[in-house]
Amino acid sequence: MKFQSLRGMQDIFQSDSKKWHQLRQAYQLVLNRYGIGEVQNPILENLNLFVRTVGDSSDIVNKELYSFQDRNGDFIALRPEGTAGFIRSIIEKKIEHESHKAYYAGPMFRYERPQKGRFRQFHQLGVEYVGFPEGDADLEIISIVADLLEELGISQKAVIHINHLGSSEVKQQYCNVLKEFLMDYKDSLSEIDQKRLESNPLRVLDSKDESAQDILALQEVPRYEEFLTEEHLQLLNDINDTFQERVDISIDHKLVRGLDYYTGLVFEVLSNELGAQDSFIGGGRYDNLILELGGKEQSAIGFAVGLDRLLTLFEPSNEDRKKIIFINLAGSNRHHAYKIASNIRALSKKVTVESILTDASLKSQLRKANKLGGDFVLIIGDDEITSGNFIWKDLNEGTQEIVTLEQLTGKITHL
Image (cartoon, rainbow, N blue to C red):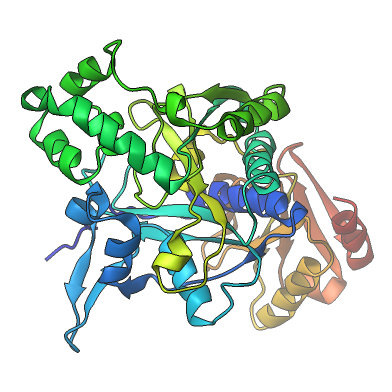
């Protein structure tokens, strides 16, 4: 029997890993500039944690959770996002009253229909600021996003959409008015949107259904911005004024985000180069979540980056790293040849020394060296070990020379 990967799960091989490595280096460089430290939380959590935080009206809870009952009878879920687990951890450690600037990265799981840029096991980078009220922290969060886009060289491919959901009271007031308006059109809505209308009317604003879009395009539909205070609107204008020269900013009052815990600022980063799944960064403020989970009342804001989608936009730079292919032709002295190769690796962090671990002919190993993308070949046999002179081939120039160990050391250190 041949086994295959589960639907929506992907294998990442060496060729892709190099791109992932550069992506990690880029975002870690940006986050280090802001003094943001890494945290690691479990992949498995109590099922009710996500029901409480994400919201029982969300698609994540209703259709997408990977959940099961373990041998102890507890209901467990694979994490569909990272905020809930992080907040659970700081409450459990009784440090939620402190300020935190944290990030995490790793796999998340949602039972979605796989398509381009959407997997059932996907990778997310999350950034969380806890203990910072609305104002400067919101500007810094958007600054981090802008820096990420610039560091990755994709600022010209992206637009940051921003909105403000107001306070919990404003959000509820608007929900009541929106629901009253949409009830007149309930029969025209899809079955899913009718359920959303009852559980969380804001979710209808996020609907991709054509009938909902037609209704929301009507002139008389309640406008969210009419319910916001001057302070709420001013924050959006401040963000736009601060960052519009670095990245495209769009104030979008239909943006509500899909998770129930958001209040205050919400935002998404979109790219038309991603097709239908055009959102790859999303976040916002969640000032009530910590209190709802049993912690102390505390301000918080954060965002998540869909790394799989981001990877399709990111063009990695060519690494300025030389590759030396080591061919060991020695017989009884093979371990001496490997010692030389090991010493060479220690000479420079800019050099890769890859061994061809085979007893194939020299001709075959040279073909392999070209296939591996080597820049140089170092050949060491019994005669070379005895004489202290080694064969050095430059595959790019097509030249070959005999070098002493001292000369070889000089070549490596100057690559």
